Amino acid sequence: MNRIFREANILLPKTEHPEKWAVIACDQHTSEPGYWEKVRANCTEAYSALDMILPEAYLEEDNTKRTEAIHAAMEGAWEADWFKEYTDAYIYVERTLHDGRVRRGIVGCVDLEAYDYHDHADTGVRATEKTVAERIPPRRRIRQDALLELPHVILLMDDDKVRILDQIEAEKADLPLLYDFELMLEGGRIKGYLIENERKDRVNALMDAYMEQQKQKFTDCAPLYFASGDGNHSLASAKAAYEKKKRLDPSVAEEGRMERYALAELEDLQDPVQEFEPIHRVLFDIDPDVLQQSLDAVCAAEGMPFTLVIGDREEVRYLDPKLGDYELAVLQPFLDAYCSTYGGTMDYIHGEDAARALASKPGSAAILLKPLSKDGFFRNIARNGVYPRKTFSIGEAEEKRYYMEARRIR
Image 1 (cartoon, helix red, strand yellow):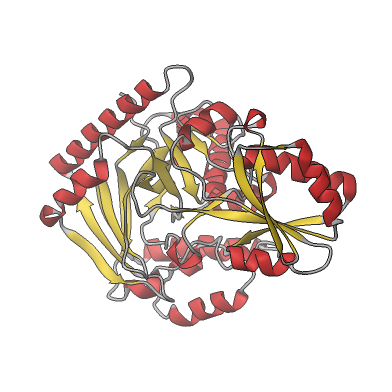
Image 2 (spheres, one colour):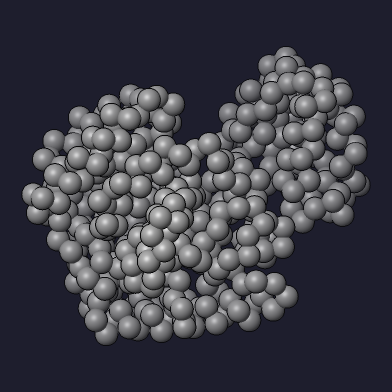
């Protein structure tokens, strides 16, 4: 079987202070350069993951020199023998969040041949939300000539029967502990366990069973095995860089070539710790009465509920289920068309209280959404394509993946 998530040659830093190496995903705190200044102040080791990534807080700048510095930092760390390599291995990860919950995952590599981020892809690995093409080129330029990759990508599986993570956790006492430390700036605690040799073969057998499970679910369309939950634009950039290299040298598409794969952490959609937080819509510079009347076109007496907030007034309304399989399949096209026709702007807001506060201003309104259901999550992607951009968020900013593992890609 062509295993599209598999073991990898994984690099870990040789350091007594991993908390100074590991930094949060580059797509967090995008409007807070002060946060990244704090990160820099924490990174006093010879090499830090911060030196090998491009925080999106700086994405709008000319990053030619930053890109060159990133490549130089990778080369320097490699030449200085900064990493220890674990070949043909997985790493089982446990991330203790600030509230004590533990999120589990497996670090391995995903086959980029099996991944497509476009809206209606039918590959085994797909995006969950719409990819913004303009965000890809800066990251592709970094990866194109990079010696190493550092992943913040989190892939999701829909494992309701095989229970891969449960089976690994049950045996973790027998796994070598690779790292165990507190992450910087309230990131919680992280542990990593090595899976190699016969235990790696056991995980591969579980992966085969999971893929067979998914095939049985998708008898009417192409099966979806894995979907990017976080870091989709970085994974899309890896795909774009790989396709460019393949055009120049078709041999990079051979199975086992390092360029063909991307390192990622695989987590289970069905794990109770995975919570899909809704991202609400707030409209500004509009006539709320016109919005209320316009919503009649997509609403019904019963269906999918949402809350409309205007000033201090709240009203629960129902989207017509005949128009789409989930709320934003109906609302997002409606809101885009509304702003195009009547003017106004739209923002995407985390947290009901923040959205309500914004809706209290004159000429504003908020649409509060329910959390996205896990049931049918993969099925919706397979049937309808990716979810609209900013449909959901998995956890809060400090709960996102920190860069820890690395892999050589040339």
